[in-house]
Image 1 (spheres, rainbow, N blue to C red):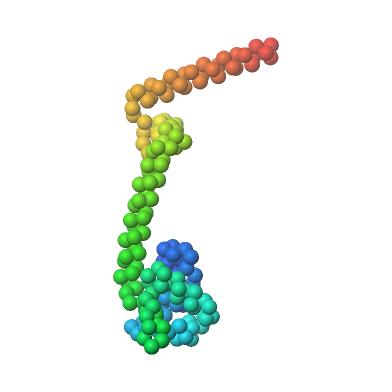
Image 2: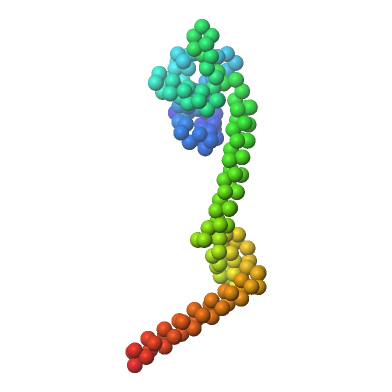
Amino acid sequence: MLDLESAKLWGIYRHIFPGFSQSHIAVYRCLWRIEPRTGEEIIAETGLAKATVFKALSSLVKEGLVKKMRLGKVCYCAPDPLGDYAVLCRGLRSKLESGKETIGSLIKNSSGLGGEVYLVKRDGGQQRLILKGTRETLTDECKLLDLRRAIDSQLRQASEQKAKAWAVCR
């Protein structure tokens, strides 16, 4: 069970590192001290199993949050947690912006999403045609005329099918 401060950290870091467990946070927070700590000191302070601590340390070193050094014994430290977090945030922001652009272009170029048009009723009974991909009102006169022709054609076909169905019933 995490203390309140570690639980707050867990709430932040679990979204950045989905593979991290609460044990990762306990080990990482233990290393926020000025002096480097050995694996045995971390085990004693956190109360976690040896395998759990060393697995967490391996992950934290791999992600660049913890430095491994040899000072007679192998020691670990987290030299700049706030700076590391700032770097992570910049990297995530960049990935999110890139992802937004990619998704936008996929929607725009997707035959299944980009060209779909919806009839939306607004308050007061007004109706608008909107493009699904951009959620903007369709205002292009040529496209509106094309839609009108397609709707008129479908209405004629529906009327003809209805007339045929009535003729069969008589």
